[in-house]
Image (cartoon, rainbow, N blue to C red; front, top):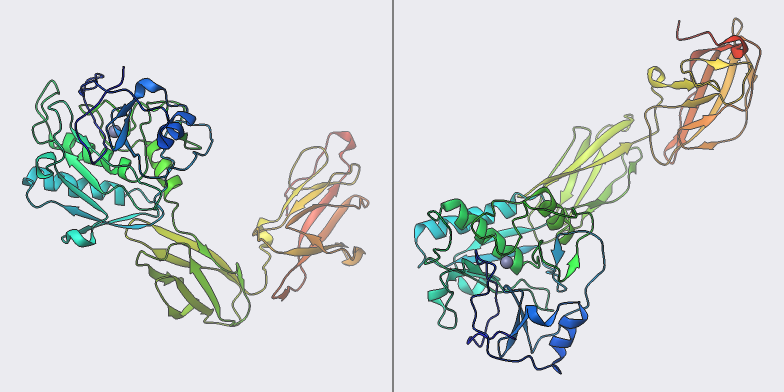
Length: 436
Ligand SMILES: [Zn+2]
């Protein structure tokens, strides 16, 4: 049995409290339709698909227009679900119909605020101009083509293949299907849910569409659960993962290293949301735009870690940048030996290892050993080892040595600097330690 509604235009989403679909059944699916074939290829069973004339309504709450193209879904392995059509813009204007009462207008504002607080690369802007709106939120009664049943709280619109969000959200001020009174949080949560549909999220607790990687295998707290209009509350941890999958947070591309007072430009992955750029104290901002920042070190003699921060309305992203030559923090050099103890080496065992701090990418290093008391160099391999750790290929006689290191990055090579280390005969149960 297929269900059919009388509407002709929109599609929809119902968020009924009951599991029952409120729509009347009276039409068979036309099995040759390309969109229907696509839906079935996604594994959606016939009984979840309702033919609405110009569109198919899936699972009571998702709309697929017959005259649009829908992409094949991606495969993955978790529970939040994404619509095959991604929204490809980051800055989305939402028009809140001023004819709704203050409860619904405020619910819409609060739902938008929850989306904007998700630390994703998405920004929902409230616009007062319909012409600028990507999404309009309105009562069903404000759209002649829609009339939501009293057990349907709201309905959203899925994105099509044009990369834009679904265009309308209808809410039902006459919804009365919960056991108690309709609370303001219910209104907020349900607008939040419908916005999710318009941005490409499907129902977490249903079986169609692509699973979003990294989300939990079950998520009773998801605000995108379907058929739970009376109990959904706010984004779950899995919802946040899903949102950040669909709208990745900003990243900053550019060199991890600046030498001397070179001028370097960094570029933001998001260009349509205003960015407030700031830097740590030894980086000067030469210029900046909405998509990039050009900086240089203020002090050419400084070697150390600095950062650039990009602040969006929803989140701040920090990019750490190393300035100048590497440094060696002698107090943080660590030694381990072949018997699994730390702080000293074994003269009787191979497997003496060291690690140099701070850990820095893009560096090589050399090591050498001097022997006390005269500090003569007893070991000095010419090899430039990559990274910041290694295994000593040398086992001297027991005693105290100076372990020296110098590091190289593309800005240059540091001077040698060293710290004492004891080689101990570990064959009789170890010994030694950090008694310097
Ligand atoms: Zn829904």
